[in-house]
Image 1 (cartoon, rainbow, N blue to C red):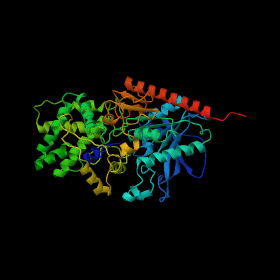
Image 2: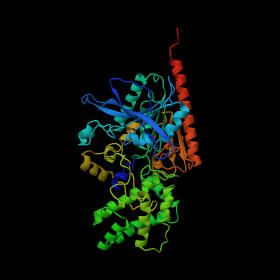
Image 3: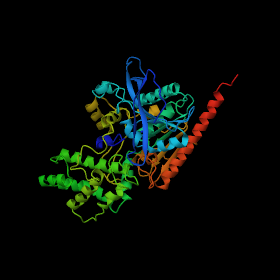
Image 4: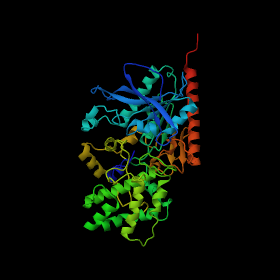
Length: 500
């Protein structure tokens, strides 16, 4: 879940199989074998299928169906009864998450598990109304987390009844970010479907009345503060410097040229968007502050914030122009690390594999995540959380208004102690950890903190440069998986009819 713009950022955030089977509701398209984007030495193979899902699981008037895409890999699966690791798809193309979730591929061999990556409705190829899915709010009406969870539950049940050897397979939900929220909620809402869940970097508490609205940006600021001399303070000063420099026509031209912008800055509205673009850039850098070269949102060097902060290690006597020259060099670490960009596009901060419009609609309905900045405890300009202003914006764009309390009502907020078998993992460098579960709630609702971890680092492929904390986290997660599998098999044996 990525930050779209400042207004959206204030309330939202912002991946297999040789068993051949042909049934009425499932069709295989093709198989793929390719290299991991972050591990050139790793080849992954999966097959792509589509499953006919109901457009509306909870009503009876809309009786249409759509084709939900899912990917399967069973190279290591030992049947009958081998476990299934089920990825609960996020707000984007499922192949992207599949390729970036190396932990599942590495764990499949350890557990003799099948992998299933299920695409979230309205993203990638899983469009309920085809090309008309985003036409208006009437077509977008079925884009909810509840409908997506029902998709996952129905798909799992169908797989277990139609795949030979899968009838008694324990299923573990796995997800990161919004996908992590879904994995936790899938276990909560459908405990008979999945035996446990790993919710990585899942801000299930980043909702109204659950955490302070300013904590998200405080974590971003802390990342920059610890990564270089004067780094956070100079970013804080840069907002006033932008205001000063942009007050003249020549200053606007200088900024446009200094930052190599594709579209030159011409007026105050451009400056507003420019500053929002910079803010999103700092947030995204915090999310992907990985200890090795990575290509998750953008191609980046190891510990990118440390690299960025080298350009911001300036003393207090520098001029506005000198400061903004440093900022431009820092920004280009994120947008032009490879040197292949001829100009920078301020309307784009992350990969095109994410479904920004769909996520914005979700934020305008039930995913209302309050965020604010004060310019004192964080490095951003002051902006309070204004639910009414956001609601008005949503209404003007989609013709809908958000329900700020709904997620707490439907998923329990912080009152979730009655649930079980969920791991909440969070990275200390990840701003989304501010809305995550950071302590053990019960013996089976557990928190794993990764101090040197950015956004769902534990779900990525292992790397020689991984900090010890993420190696320990992955080992512990596998131990929990093994225990859940044992519990499930024991329960299955107890309920299995005795031979006559």
